[in-house]
Amino acid sequence: MATLAQPAPPPSAPDPRPAPHTAPSPHPDPEPHPDPAPGPSPALGPHPDPRPHSVPHPHPDADWQPAPHPRPADGPLPTGHPRPGAALPPAAPETRLRRLTPQLHAAVMGTAVLGTAGAGLPLAGLPGVRTACTAVWALALLALAVLLPARAAHWARHPDRARAHLLDPAVAPFHGCLSMALTSVGGGALVVGRDWLGTGPAVGLAAVLWAAGMVAGLVVAVVIPYLMVVRHPMEAPSPVWLLPVVAPMVSAATGPLLAPHLPAGQARATLLAACLGLFGVSLLAALLILPPVFTRLVAAGPPPLPATPALLLVLGPLGQSATAAAALAGAAPDLPYGRALAVAYGLPVLGFALLWLALAGALVVRARRRGMRFGLSWWAFTFPVGTCVTGLEGMARLTGLVVLDGAAVALYALLVAGWLAAAPATVRGLLSGSLPAGPAPAPRAPAPGTARTR
Image (cartoon, rainbow, N blue to C red; front, side):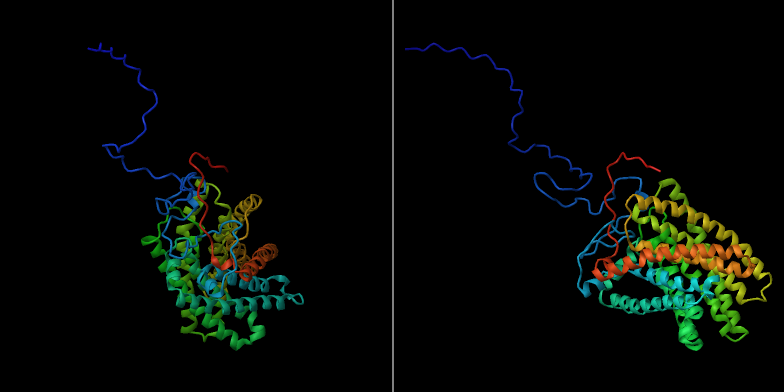
């Protein structure tokens, strides 16, 4: 029997829900865009950054951070500023040696200037003051005697790490601290060290340290700027750039102390001429760096909290050049108009140094109130301030003005406070094994859209 055909059902409305994807699309997806900021995925957990060491998002402090650079196999390279509050577990002696960085030479510089600057104050005649200054200088000499073999062993056993420091744009400028540590300790041997060593051994020690520091300073003043030009991906000026070029100025300031111990004639004149040349090398190089540093500070706003003490490094070439001018004028009394030229240069420069000290000090207080914690950058509170003390002492000798002596005493009190803030924390970090690891990379910048606050 034939069956009646059933009418076809009316077409149903299309399902609004999307059908599940079961087959690959004939058109492949374009190359996926990397995440704006790597982080843990809620479903898959942590995942590697698809962009190795990408540049962080722009933020108010971005211009003060060093450009990205490759990391060695054993961890991140140290940068110029430690992570606030970073605590590292104690390390074995070999690990501590591997993590040793050139920043520790700043501790030698800051301790040495504490002794030599104190000996030039009008209060140095009080009982026990000069002995205390000599003891502080002896502590700097001891620290230098320990640090020099340690750095040599670091280069011998861990050359990969040492070369990585040279290629790190934030660590490389600190190689200039070696020269300044040598020359500052050598100059202190003639100022206060002779009380304990005797004149002959003190002169010999000062001559060896000055010659070694002078050569090291000239090498660093050429090599580090060369690396900055051809190897370091620099984006913004930093006060740390002054460290390699201010080293010859320290040699120019301490060299005239050796002049009275050389025979009159060619030997003494050659030394003073060399010091004048070192003065010019450092001064002109610093004048090239200081304007962009100030411009960046005004344009980009305050630096990150750990980097704020580095602003005091600007005082180094200012105070040290005034010290060198006074020392050269005193060592060459027959130089025509030598004393007048030294005073005409030194007093205006020291006036600007005091202005910068007030500005940098206000920013340091601001950073401290916002949570700035200890780092090796705190040694910027010592040596740069000490150069201003010695500069004021030199100008006071040339002019006889009591007000300059009073200003030197006031700045020396600030120097003592800075040393007391940096030295005990450094010793604790060395004993615990957390300090030699060096600074850690700066934290990732916040998302775009943040505005700079002044």
